Image (cartoon, rainbow, N blue to C red; front, side, top):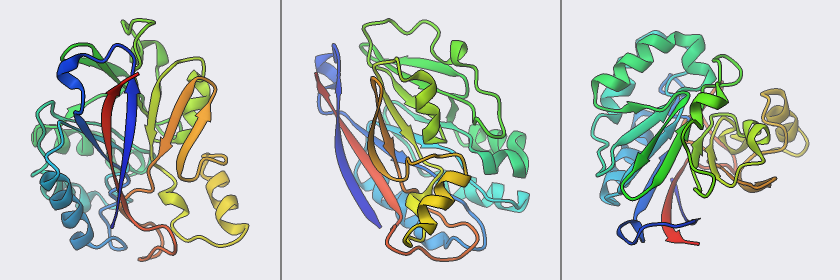
Length: 240
């Protein structure tokens, strides 16, 4: 498990949020090819860090509706001062999006699909629906966010950042698994055919937007990763 620590510099960050931490987890993919032990370890590591906010960017399951409830049970221990907030990914839709949404809300998680919230002191978090299987509404997601703010935007597919590159924001994404299996030429091709363009892993500048692509936790198609370990990212908030 790779634990990454990064900094988000937010305009007009209130003193009360200086040094606050955000845990970002994505692409859980509870299924036959992802070990429950890996997922439970990720939950343990996250809670031991005592983050102030937890953000989840979709693909909780892969294809079997029977994985939905076990996935929710594994994630249920996640708790934070400002809550656990999520969006769905393409695999959640092709499995059973209403059931996945319901299971997560029943354990106290809060959906940010095509909407936003303002946390203590003016920290804005916006979420978008999946662009491949869902229906993102940008006007709804960004409604009411002041121009001077530096929102944190949740978008499952990193290529979505190009659609709001005019916005001074931080975008947190997943979808790519960091390539999952890193091989010359083939990995870049695989990332492109799932609609993520060249945004495989790590930081990217997309116009005014700063994009971070998390390599995620789970697997699809094969039960292993090669040079793309599962990842949890902790972001520390600092004033700009």
